[in-house]
Amino acid sequence: MTRAPASRTPASRAAGGAGAARAAAPHQAPAVTRAIRVLKLLAAAREPMGVNAIARELGMVPSSCLHILRALADDGLVQVDARSKQYALGLGLLTLAHDMLGKSHFASLVQPELERLARRYGATATAVELDARERMVVVAVAQAPTFLQIQVGVGSRFPAYISATGRCVAAHSGLDRAQLRQRFGALKWQAAPRFEDWLAEVEAARANGFAVDVGNYICGFTIVAALVGAAEAPRQAISIVCVSEQINGERLAALERDTRETALRLGARLTSRP
Image (tube, one colour):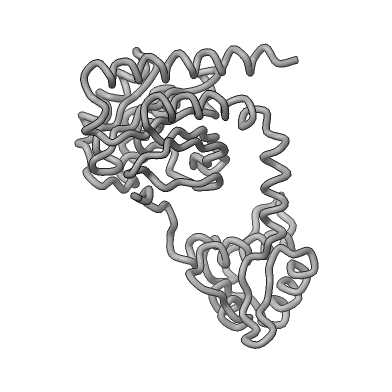
């Protein structure tokens, strides 16, 4: 089983950066902001952390950090080991995520289509939504029972401009060449395309209604993606991941058509929702 390239950054970066010098934005409540930074830090950490380590990483006063951790623990958002006094994310976050996904019309609508595509092409099929930080978040997954597959779960995050999905997003982003080059320069590929080639594929995605990544994002895998809904404001997409050796020629062309038509069908159903 192959794991999709991780989009995680070092703990301090994921938590919003260390140091108290970073001022909260005017619309943020400082206490809430600090609690969110604690959660992001624990999410990025490879193992549980103690109060002093968390406070040091985030530039907090240890006593203030402890108060935040205790409040989060009261609601099950973090958990503490009674012996080591080390903190980690709590199961309460799973409850929140489960409740949120249960109310997602897109996730429930797309799931049967993902399962159909996964079975038909022996693939891993995902549905993603764009968040406010230019990341695609997986909201639904279906996997065919094949020996070799990509390991991806609901909640996984990827840069918005990476892979086949990223070419689709870039095609309808409204960004100019310099802005696209900046986004492209920040991406991490297993076999990076040249910017000029990537830009040509972005234009092809605009014309064709789908995009293809052949071994750039993940070596040995071909990914076909299409946006769902209004192209002028891309927020959702579907992406189908196949072993490259098993998806070429007419079979790849069929997958491209199927992905585009499925995305159009889903988009129509979303817009017709009362």
